[in-house]
Length: 327
Image 1: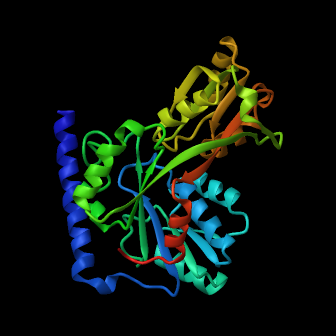
Image 2: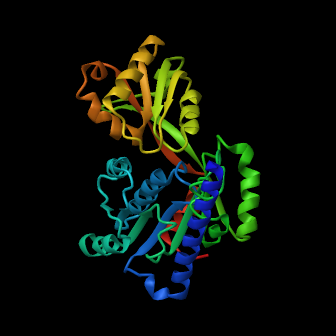
Image 3: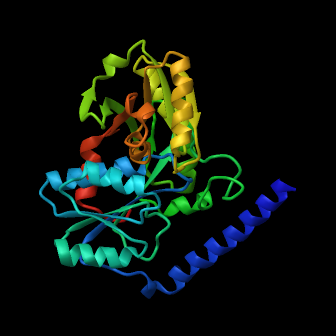
């Protein structure tokens, strides 16, 4: 029965998508243009593809080349907003559901020449010059089809709108790369495809304002906790730096941790000999407030794994971002 209901809801969801997209094709005046170049970073599945790290990378690269940049995000979870602001202290990050409004604000208030639209593939109202779609190489299209039965936010044929595909976490999902490429090229024969990895840089002990080298976790017994769409890749990355995971807790994406959740988890970690708890940068923003309120948590080592988004042909990718145009 649950499967039947899920399939029925997915069918209704598809009908709504078709109607919305058709309205933009038939009424192109609904698509608004602003006096800046817009680069959209998005995906076709529900989370876990590395949109936020890529958004930050593009904004940094454009700023490095002397461009005035602003980032536009809807801000589904405050953690993503905080992550962007932390990574981009000198670049405006505008939060709001109305992307056209925040785009105009960025141009008028900050004289932005480039706007990087975080999670923008499904937002058709703002005209863009480049549509980048991330595909998680580990879980490329997810199980079960369209949400809510599966994790697809649109039918796969919608990928024909994209200009660039980036196969993220390609080192962890290497065996899937040929099939993913084949599928994308069947949908868009002239597709531009890059590969990328989430390269671990260091661990951040944010409460104590210090950095911990990757080598310091080698052969250490650690516990990991996360509330992200793809915990497997995060945990595998921790293991790949040489740490031994003795306890792992996985919560729903954007889950709001409670103090009790963390207190119970730390108690388990201690009992298993783990001296550190490792989480993601995104999750840390929802964990940190609790560390200040509970003595049993404040004395424990909570570390965030900092990663860098690395693309295989960096020079070509940056060139395309500096000169965005629809393919």
